[in-house]
Image (cartoon, rainbow, N blue to C red; front, side):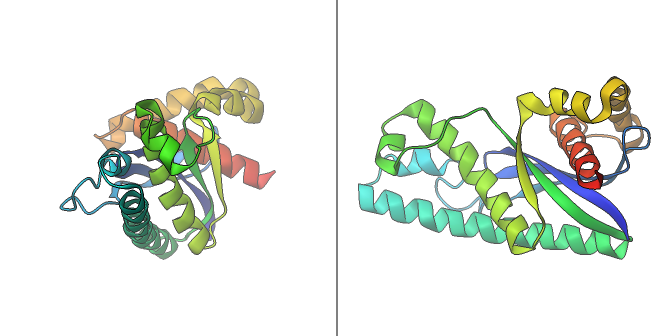
Length: 200
């Protein structure tokens, strides 16, 4: 089985997932997809903390907990499917990376709901946590990397080859076709870095 890694860049209710193999000279995308981790028919699903702000404290807590269960279940199902597909094609997932913002640690729910900026921070962390839990459930080692640290980590890992790796990743969109945005590029770079770190 060839080793590969998964990178995930998270948005409200979904994540851009890329599975990559290879290194700085031969990085290859072997799977990519949009993974929805909410029930879009459920009220407030894409912005659970925004929705919870208008509820009583006990109802808000219950709503957030219920939403977290749904997102965790959907993330797990998606990652199971990805892992099985990769296994069928001769790849073993050695590590997953969830890209992080530079947000600070979150306070208790009441303080989160009292601050609009904190609500946005909490929602980002909410959906990242669903992916992290899914990886842990599947026994895929998972790490979080701040997106703003990606370039520095690439330089540390690949030194003078880091710029050519970024160019190679950017060019992959020509053969893979759309979507090939910042989501997929960042997730791919994170996956390749994780794979190289794993091989050390």
